[in-house]
Length: 618
Image (cartoon, rainbow, N blue to C red):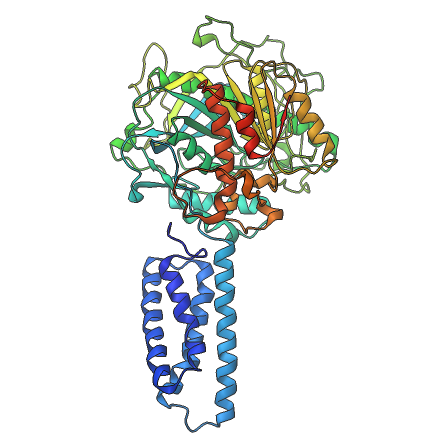
């Protein structure tokens, strides 16, 4: 459905035209009226059959209903079937039927335009793009969102990487999941989390991207970019940016954070839903937000360690299953993973943590020459093992997916240190639910990505709460060489100097507005001992920097309306219209910063970034 017209596929658009034309055709001379109306009826019937076979999208149902009504009031008079009825009755029936048909067709057309199947921008780089999904378990880090003592933290990671060959349309990856069922589950879960009808995101679940699942990786060593989504967000929320970066020679690893992301599908098909909620108390919600930020930062550091092992060939090959034709798992149920014992109230799954518990970083900075196996410093035995979350009242309302950056109220929990990590890996393509463990003594089959991940050149990025996690992870772990905060309010409880250059992309903030957000952000950016850049994008909203403009109504209050002067200028084909301005701008500004910091590309970075908005250098 990439060739869309006003949100409609070519067949849907032709059906719409055939549904509308019979109404004005009534005004044609008798000699032209009959052939035009009958031709429209034939075309409409053919399109309806094609759509019935291929699948009718719900926004198109009013169009088909309106077309059927229009033909019902315009075709019979051509054959004189109602000649015996009063002329006035026939005229009024035709007029009312024609008006109703036009209303239905217009309603369907507007809905399809407002909520289209997203069409992703064509990446502009020299590489084709491949993608795969892996699942990794940190066996030494307890899962803070459950009460089971043997439960360990699991993360699901989607990789986009430079690939060989072409991105064939037939092999392109789905947008929201590995399978149609997973994509629908994620779409409905995110919509439910946001308090919206499930139908709103159904069209996004139908989309395919520009990357090919399991495509062979291109030769070379590529810088790595880690990404954490917004509060309640999912790993795919910035797919357009990830694909653009991969086409330019970066490997992008985006995380699902279980019990934080709205919906996470595990390798065995189990579905984990978010447990975040707000209390309404700003102080408590800020404390929880800081705790969830710490959990995400620990996830990012753990994934970086795993990527290093993947590069060395110590983990199972995430592309081998694709090469062998093994199908990815299908969700088997919509239920919580690692559920509490029967009868345990949900509000009791989060045990309080003593106020004296330390919130210091999980991983200490790694001195030069430290063996990989010692990257995770052990915590003294006296350290409290209290649980992550405070109890959440049953009446607490569910939080929002994209918390406005200037707001100080989001949901979260407390993070606590854990013992040294014993790492375990599992590829999502495995046919069984067994864990594929790897160890230095018994290395797994080398990955097709082995030797291609340059973990000496790594950037950490994130949107909203994910941006806050990126800032915290960079301060705690100097393996990260650069950091990008995409419209995220900093949540580090103890800001301190850090050596990485940092970029912050910020939605349009008028002078004097959201002063606490700007003040806090500038305070953290100024702690960089390298360079700090804040780019305020005119006309941008919080969701401008995600894929949301591709499939949500193009209303400035929802997805923003970035100024044309700040839109990226590239030569890539554009078949998505103005909807892709935000995703393209995000990718272009991100790539410019990464090229300068990870690849040492020559040029004036400040001048380049100033093309995307109002630049402040700190």
